Length: 209
Image (tube, rainbow, N blue to C red; front, top):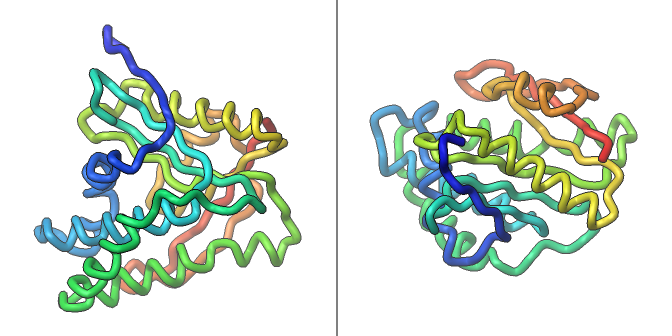
């Protein structure tokens, strides 16, 4: 990684501003181009959901600064208790989003795609041990192997916790080739209406640990 030293540790409450910084720009520009405040609100709204569900995490740190995050959960275990700040900020962010002219487009995507992504798994009778909820790398640090390192760290964490497999969900906006290159098999494909984005594909990937 070009001489950089990357360390890994668990998520800490003080990491939230760094996580929001890294996640900002992942979704907001698709719905609120040119509106950085709405983009920041989308990041809060998006990230807090995953913080609230997660019970496993790894953070990539370079020179003391978090530069990448991966959040996951062991199925059947309760979530952690580190979500209070993010959950408190979510309500304020949602109010600001509803005040914008295009908030319905984002909320439509959020509710129809993200809010119902588990339904096809249940309908297919698939019971999986663990899930990656969020993988995000600082845009300025992408292409240096940090995403791969975080995914491997989460796989190790899940395996040590007794999981036999790990799955993740990727929408049509994501790079599916990254996951297949990491040994994940696409096990299911579904779709959902997503406002002006039309029908968005939802891809389910699994890897045996």
